[in-house]
Length: 464
Ligand code: URP
Ligand code: ZN
Ligand code: ZN
Ligand code: ZN
Image 1: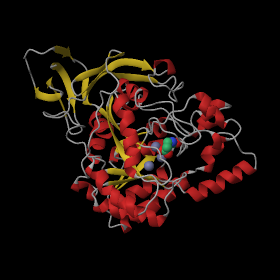
Image 2: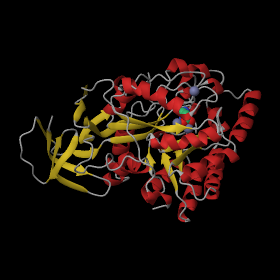
Image 3: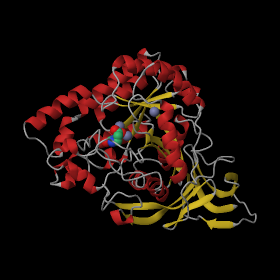
Image 4: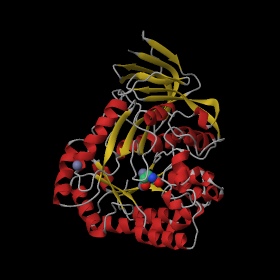
């Protein structure tokens, strides 16, 4: 099927231009000021922006966190993504059985996604322990198209410093990217215990037991360990606060290859949400927690000056019933929020339309840079001849109020209830086939493909 898109404002990270675009055989066939050829479908995109499909490099579909299993699988989660203009996810796989190999989890997840995903997908390798077998196996994971790996400094499978160093050295050697969830586990556990012991069980104590200092300390520790590991490239996931950003900037100024991701929840929501009574406050429990509102301007500045590289979501959904397990004890509430559908619309409305960032920087944060850092560029993340025709049309005149009824995932609430957005995706295309148009879904389960990702580009061995 061929599609001719006419009169669009075509936006890439580097520049914007007016023109027509022809899609054929799933690829972008031609871009020119005027194209007049017959096509199966002609779309007049006057007044709309055409951007490369959104790439969310931090989701947790179908994840089992021990106390609960998330309510979105690779079908519901990727349908929601498609409605919000996202055409590729890189999922952070959950932990497997104790002692299991890296490929074990990969095969489990590939099977789920192959049957269910409506958009393209890949996975970050999940490191749950370090030994010689795992270090060996990293090479074959890279050969299988998995060029980034995630390690945790907290939760059940946290790594100690010597294992972190082994992982960093090995991944550096393999030209793979080390991603980290940084929180000081020992300090968090001390604070949690102290709070529970004194009856401080409300949602606000979730935030107070995981303060910004715990995250910032772990970020600075990781930065130093990465420097020790022959300047291994390091990617900080879900950065929530200004103190952590200060450490990241300092390392970047020295030329160390340290990269950072933030998420909409840290830009649009703050700690006040935990003051709400009953289940209301539980809706926002995630780690790292929402911060004091003043951090938000610092994160916006970081996105604009280039010290924050990507905006992803950490989409990890639980129903209100699941969240209610935390009534009377915040530590019993499964951690995570929905976000995969609202990421791109929120960033466009609150970023671009409110004049807080250029539309090119927006495209860079939500699509181009994620594609580059995670080995999918220029197949994805750019509107260019020969690239996958993963395309999203945004109508800047469309006004949408976010409500849970209008969401397409399985979660029965949205943290952004009542947000009034200016501008919204009106068409989402994956490799030339229309997934969503005017609020109608046209995709099918299993049409997403596994994307084999390349090793880290040489230029990311140095900061810029
Ligand atoms: O609370 C969160 N973020 N849950 C998902 C797992 C993680 O830490 O990324
Ligand atoms: Zn296994
Ligand atoms: Zn995390
Ligand atoms: Zn996560």
